[in-house]
Length: 456
Image (tube, rainbow, N blue to C red; front, side):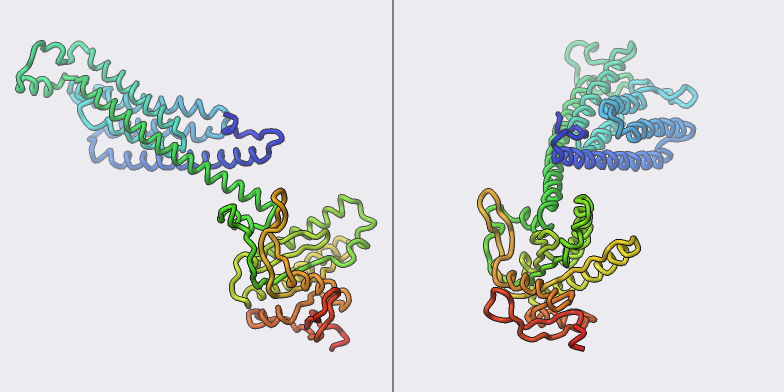
């Protein structure tokens, strides 16, 4: 199926990202399965000297080493494009090696003088079941089913080979009905091989295979659902603020963004005289400049728990408390701390630009704190989660005053008062008193930083 193909589908970058994410999870599952297999091999290697005597220990340790190599080879080649059929081939080799180890006599000089039929009378068949359990770690039901089929077929072939040896004792040769003592004598004969045992082993193996395959299929479905959600979350975060994306995925579609009134801090930022700065630049350099600014600014907004409401050409609008609400002082503090960090980052960026001989970039920031309506606006075809109300309008007007007062940050008294007690080493802000805002009747008490020279 194309869905499982690791290669990108032209024109379907979302599908490609999903396929790559699923492939990465599968690779992680295969790596974990190999690690578990290695641990099991080490445990068996440590356990062997306690249950096997003398030179037979080295013989079986050699077989354990061969089993480890049968797992190592497909693990090292797991990213190869033909890794899947190779894995199926090595599963068959695993089953064949374990079955041969159980049924074949060791070399004559270390073998017990027992009939070969005795080799299937003990519990060594459980090693094959351990192999079946290990296949469940791959996140692939097909591996479980194939392992179960290989166990049934190869083990049956081995048992039937012993069953058809000339010296094998079978119930089919006894003829007629046997007394209980005679049945016991046949079963206890070292040369006895019973078909009923084989049928029981095959039935139980088939049941275990079905149950494990169903469990792995369910786990895989959950893995795919989680992977799809993570890919969708990552894709969504490319278009909306991460906290909005998380809220959209956490809430039911019909409940997210229901209008609510909250006290929020709103931050507007804008590059001064951007049109004049870039009028002689090539369009690609203008885009590069904007992108460099947006990358820096966005990281700082997210670091302070803000929501990037929208980009506004050479500026942006960010909100704090629109989704989580919370303590008034904390919301305002996050917004003001974000504004100060933005200006520090601008200083560092301008130093780098000056070292390259390019013009500096100045940023004006306006902040206000107050009640606003938070929620979805727009139509059924195009909706946007945003903040609407006087708080946003005031913050926008305040940002425009940074040019008039030649300051880098202008903040309303409501925001500064709410944040003042929660910021360590808050720089000095000049109190400009009540200041008129364009388009608004009621003035706002304004504070600016740095302090204007006239106020010193």
